[in-house]
Length: 399
Image 1 (cartoon, rainbow, N blue to C red):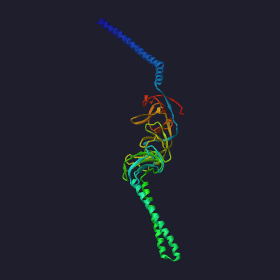
Image 2: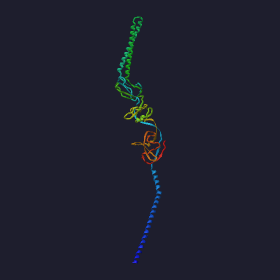
Image 3: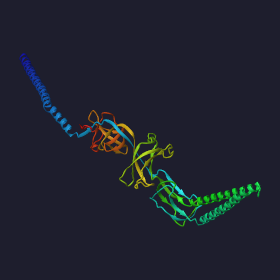
């Protein structure tokens, strides 16, 4: 028994020692592995950091440079305000400035001759057409004969008075007889004057059978032919333009009409013609049409065969000047919303600006509103840009 107990105790001691050694060995290996993992992680972090330092920043710069290269280069200008003529555009009809309708003045009758044609110049009082006057001529002859009779009676009365004056001195006739002879002579002389006045009246009526021009001017229309019977109710037979002067009756809205004054210059271009005629506004209508909200500006024009009354024409009226930016036509675009242009903001980004444009001239287009001072405006190629695009602006000096 004592020997068996000792053997069992040695066995347990030996087993406990081996187990403790194995446990210590495993712990050492785990620590070594943990240390290796930590070292590997640190190395990986260092490697990644180095790679980022070497390639990340350089790649970002390259990408940024590439992005800059891909931005479109656009030419921009900074317009300055300058005095620009304020020009009003209008349309209207051509007409005689002073139109003169000519009709029958006298009793009328059958037209025997028409002496003028439309487009002819006539002088004041010139005969345009004649009316048959045979009856009036016979009346004039009758009145002329009556004058001769009255004059003969007046001569007889004067002769009798002269003889009576000689006899009264000798006492052969009385003073009363002389007075009666004097009255007879005076009555005969009065009848002569009456007959002459009647003849003059008849001749004047006969003269009114001639249709005459009331003033010098240009014949515009003719509405009578030989053989036609005319009278006071026949209406207008001829239309004339006094002095040949023409005008354009330009239609303008009430806002433009309110700023317009008589005396300003204008240019008129008839439809279908490439010629322009210089004129001057001589009258601004004091009345506005309540339906169309428009009024009439009358532009005086000198005579020219190309200016035909009733024709349609456009007018360019210089109504003063305004200080406004002037841009080339290439910078202005339009769509269903109206006119607009592109500007480049401080971040080099495209921004749309809706603007109100004024007159178009050889120098460019006037911008009445919508553009601030100092803004950079895209000169051209606006159709290939969109709001929000990044660009590289290249400024061009304005003239």
